[in-house]
Image 1: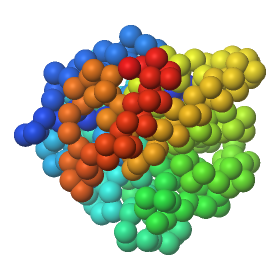
Image 2: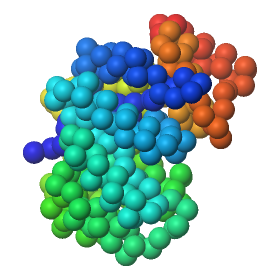
Image 3: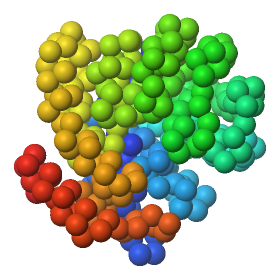
Image 4: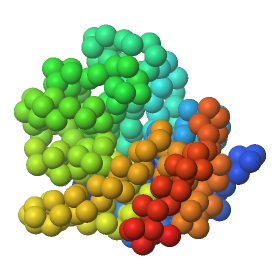
Length: 292
């Protein structure tokens, strides 16, 4: 059985000047539960875990698990570039009740493909819940090759792939090798339909932060056989997706939520606010879609 099918939101973390805004986090979770989001990802890239303390990340994961209370799957982002720490954090997330783990490739170290296999196997050996490999070379400097995915697929707990390489040819080759042993999810909102077309199960989405129902509907249309509707929705939101990636994620999406009336709060350095000109362009795009 798939970890989930459809749209998982890579949820922003609402900050105050001093910590986590848990009241607003609960409101955002309710927003997704009421608008057909299929799974929650806590502490993914969009949640800014790189600037959160270990304790904050643990609190956010536990809060999401407890608030969602089994209604939809909760995924926990537990990746890092120190395998021992990733193993420890992953064990915590399992104990906290997470349904699966999203683990980004180790960044900065620039390990080999053999190192990647050993890294993910170490985590898979340490837990009893599904592990999703997150490939985003533009951020990490490491690319998971199709043959590496094939090796990872042999581990019973390494069950999913979030592909944000943007390389459709590579993803097609990966799909041909792993077949039904690993669920493939789009990590780019502009490639949901292309990845679904080669057997993908859905998306782990930034767009879903502001359009949860529509992102769910796009996936549901394709998965139910209505390819034309899915394609229409993919194309309809092209300009909005471009606007959400007009600056480094999650700067635009967090700005968008604040413009829409949510209290997503500030970004944490080294991320900073958009320029006035860029924010004005983002606001104009949101207005075109009736979001502000």
